[in-house]
Amino acid sequence: MLIEISAFDLGLAAVLVLLLGLLGWQMNLGISRQLYIAAARTTVQLLLVGLVLKILFASTSTLFILLIAFIMISVAGWEILSRQHRKLKGWWGFGVSTGSLFISSFLITLLSLLVVIKADPWYSPQYSIPLLGMLLGNTMTGIALGMDRLIQTAWQQRPLIEQRLILGQTADEAITDIRREAMRAGMIPIINSMAAAGLVSLPGMMTGQILAGAPPVEAVKYQILIMFMIASGTGLGVISVLWLLSKRMFDERERLCFKRLLKFSHE
Image 1 (cartoon, helix red, strand yellow):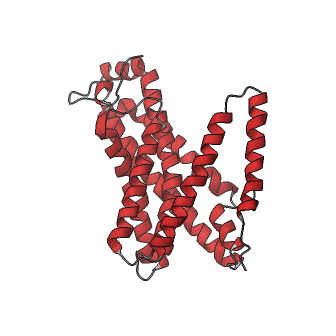
Image 2: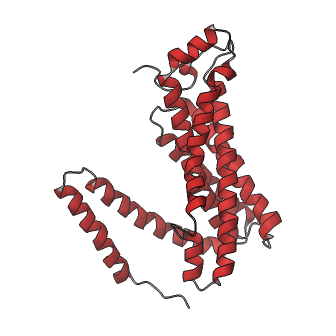
Image 3: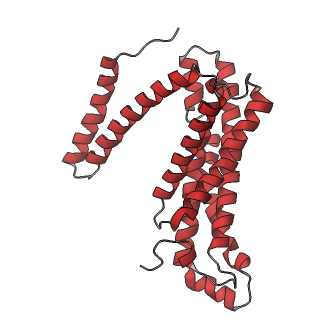
């Protein structure tokens, strides 16, 4: 039986965040304001999501559920762009980030609903929205890290890349090792999560199901499914977006050209 949490209980938990902010202010860490803003956003956003999900779970409209999924993917794509040290140019950056999320998260969620979970109907919001949300949250992190590593490293190693081009390498050959390292960086978070699951940490979905009264073994099965989905989604997303970015870095004559990719190509 699920134990309900009251507003007073949440207030007690909020006191801990308040005390942490005061400690950070006393130590001149410069994070107190951001911490309080983040806590306020978490509260407001999750309460709004709770209301939306309440309406969504009572809905049988496929279009409404797809609209919510589209909004989630769009917001995640925008968050990826906001985390980049060097901003991508124009709508192309938004398109490539949301496109990679669609390939990695939406399609894998759809495949899982149709083939693995076999939800009836397949768009059942009880399954589709939580699964998509978990995939987007984790895949978004991997893609953002991979993109930032690729762009930053390529920018710092401009002379090396141009030297390789002068010596006769193709654009793909000149960027291959940098792209490979960026892919590794994007995959590290999910690999670490998978390696530590069960021994170091209890993943959130499994913990939530157990707290809600689900049998532990069934909760574990769902968590394994989610981890595999996140790993494959992150891998597909990172590989696709970094391949597109590395192609965009070079012009038609295979010359390194950051002006095609970044808003500001000078320091």
